Amino acid sequence: MKTEYSTKAAIKAAAAIRKRAASQQPKVAIILGSGLGGLSKSIGDAVRVPFGDIPGFPEVTVAGHEGAVIVGTLGGREIVALSGRFHMYEGHPAALAAFPVRVFHALGAQELFVSNAAGGISSKLAVGDLMMISDHLNLMGANPLVGEEQEGELRFPDMTDAYNPGLRWLLRTTAEKLGITLREGVYAGLLGPSYETPSEVKMLRLLGADAVGMSTVPEVIVARALGMRVAGVSCITNAAAGVTGAALTHAEVLETTNRVSASFERLVTEFLARSAAPQLVMTR
Image 1 (cartoon, rainbow, N blue to C red):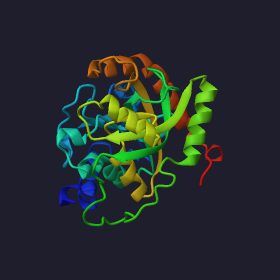
Image 2: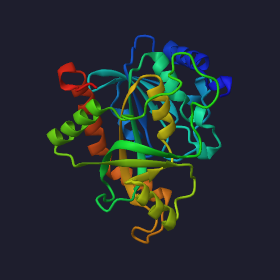
Image 3: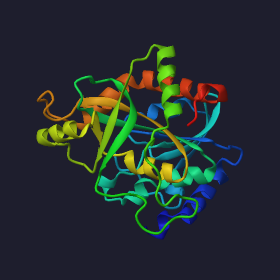
Image 4: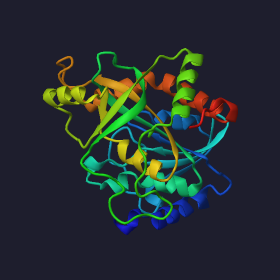
């Protein structure tokens, strides 16, 4: 791993954020996927720090990603949010794709909520569904922990429950309370940026994937190495290649996330509010 994505580099980046939001002590980090950045408008007492002002953060290049770290409050909890992310298909190494998680941990975050736009593989998923991630397949060809062992991280993190059972229970019951349909399934992370072929989608289905995307996995791996508890939701923005025969476009991704953003925002906000009550959270 290059030193610019190390724990020491994360501490330096966190210090730059803390200078702008000194009064905030975030315990939860949120990563907003393509088209899901609208949640950032609901963050109270928000302090926005552009990627360009944070050491080690490149400029955002993907449509639907704001390119800022936001510190503030949501659901009654102090949070730090990544509005936009770094993708490996942009030419970034896996360590950089996961670097914000190290930074957020250095800021004090102990939990990570990841979100993404994904293609639906399972016949049980429809366009516009929200899917709680129960597990993932790392098919991106890289692991963000490769390289020097980083201080404070497990060298060989257990990924048995990469997505915390207690947080998944809380997310499921929150959706039930709000009357929001929340599916559950396995997310397959591929490198991209090309969408999968119909034959690749058939392979993914055989491997047990319910949805497929081009992010999230590196972030979750680093979070687990740091001992952070993780929960995640995919917005099913399209049927994966070959499922319906329709062509795939990024515009469709953004259109769908815009359509379901209100439900997503309600779910995350209430989930955070309920997670503040220790008696509601089932721990491992």
